[in-house]
Image (cartoon, rainbow, N blue to C red):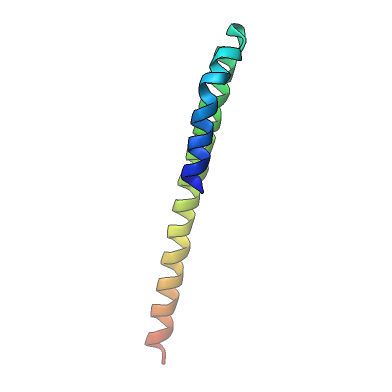
Length: 68
């Protein structure tokens, strides 16, 4: 499904480039850059928080086993 979406976007790319107003190119590039940065930061935060949660779960299960 992901590949199909990228193919469809790629097929529309030449049409969008032909019909975009030349004065709007830089604002759209700025929006694309901003969205990319936000997505990367959110992804890094999610991975970091998931790592912390997994470490806590592992340590708490290890701690429980010792007291049995």
